[in-house]
Length: 248
Image (cartoon, rainbow, N blue to C red; front, side, top):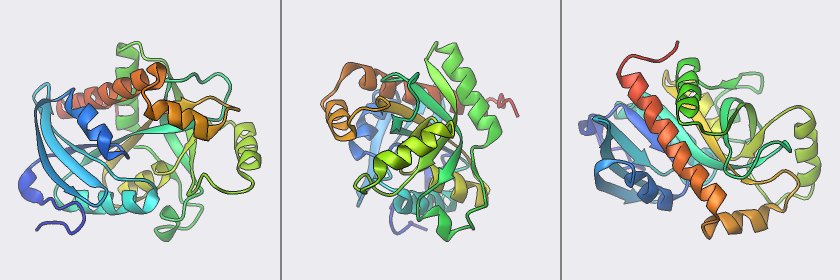
């Protein structure tokens, strides 16, 4: 049955989905796939399919925020997707994380609204351990600068005490913040999917978020390189999954 938002159905026959937020990023994923083919573009959900080292891959954007991510996960499960990796951007919460460094998220603070509609606050948003370790291994094999740890997902950049909130979570040892990871990890876990999140740092700790994101959109070299690398890391992790090489 065709799903109402992503406009895909189970005839797709693909198990692995790589999910950027930005629909434009789907084209940059296509550059790393063999035989990419556009499928649909409905609302924020732009999708294409292709193969990577012989493994069928679905690339689909989810837009901004946890609500659209949760819808994507639900509908992807309905069409037979079993493994999901988010490739997104984030702002660093620690000084040692450079532009273009990758954060491989082990778990996320659920400061979003979407994940809270699924489970009470004490329910953890954690990555699938095998898929996470496959990402860690792939990053190491590619000599990618990466950091493994906890991120925070939130719902808005435009709140009055954002600096205070970031300072608090930085002191708690969190690595970065985004808007979608908590919803992905929570809903995927509840629905029996294996999920992980890779975040490309586009804002140095202490820098102005709006200026940094503008530079990233314009193609600043380090974040652009980080984006290419997070795509490759995710695709390599899917290859490991397909070959039965997940560490756990």
